Amino acid sequence: MERGAKEKNHQLYKPYTNGIIAKDPTSLEEEIKEVRRSGSSKALDSTPEFELSDIFYFCRKGMETIMDDEVTKRFSAEELESWNLLSRTNYNFQYISLRLTVLWGLGVLIRYCFLLPLRIALAFTGISLLVVGTTVVGYLPNGRFKEFLSKHVHLMCYRICVRALTAIITYHDRKNRPRNGGICVANHTSPIDVIILASDGYYAMVGQVHGGLMGVIQRAMVKACPHVWFERSEVKDRHLVAKRLTEHVQDKSKLPILIFPEGTCINNTSVMMFKKGSFEIGATVYPVAIKYDPQFGDAFWNSSKYGMVTYLLRMMTSWAIVCSVWYLPPMTREAEEDAVQFANRVKSAIARQGGLVDLLWDGGLKREKVKDTFKEEQQKLYSKMIVGNHEDRSRS
Image (cartoon, rainbow, N blue to C red; front, side, top):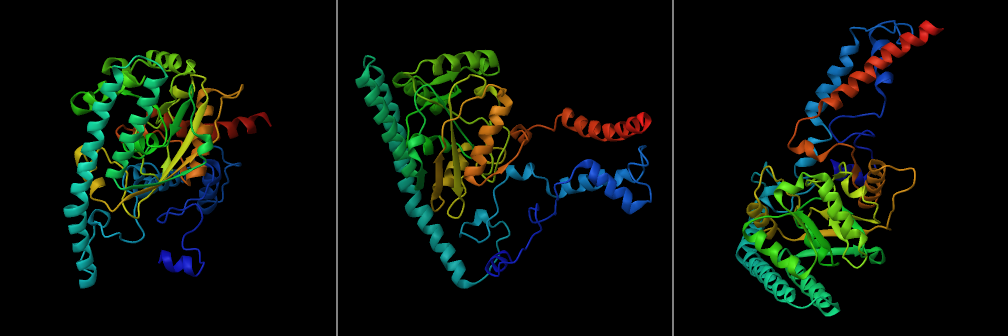
């Protein structure tokens, strides 16, 4: 239906709809007025008091949210218009034709018996070289030679890891690549966002100290490059984190910091609220938009459904990871802006460039319930509409 509508240049869905429910961008007051007009002869202006019919507006909004809200669907994989011969992208898979079944079977053999072993070998090579190379470079005295070797060891290893995913990346506007003393911020879809960007630039990473294999890699990397790692007890201390980041960006000889301010992975259809911490520092911000093409493999990590090992296995058994990266012009905080306004301006620029939906919701809703303040805000709007109209009439 969608392909046919595009070929005939017909409008399949109404404006402001996502394919299920038509949503017009109207205010609460306008919709309450419409409900009252259709349900009774009393208008909102003439009857400022509560009307029983008002509850129909809130019931409808609640049903729309249950059926198809704009937040929770950002935490599940994006649906494809056509099947890419991966069973994970067609959960209602059923027999269609013998030809398609044979093609799918051949695809399974190629992906699991040929591509997967090669990709695992490349990933093992890249990680091993990263640990060994950064450890060796770490013993060299500080200076330009050490920085030169560290940069090329990191780039070489990250590019090997990118090959392990058969990643096909198109970089745009490289003249805007982040520079020393700045902060690189990007939308976040997957853990591989790091190697996608680090295979084309040299960054200082920010993150929590881990154990196991990840801890070994972190300890080796910090010897060769001034990455910013925090202990688990330090992560929740916002002032300490801000202080460490400020000290880093004030030294113009240090690498740009790579940060994903959403704080969680979103399915690459939208950009959600940016945490304001990295925008309070006062450094130059270099926005980067990352857009994946799910036609050959979906890069989104649903961390509530898949562990890291399962996720990497799914990536390595996809056909390829195809994405585009746009380096946007650097942005600085304006005099009249606070950190939240600056973060929203950067987020909007990333959303526009990447063709993503710009949402104000917090990505933390992936694991948490909606805060009471959001509910109270709707209650205040309704009460203000009733009380405000009543006060206006009293004055007149």
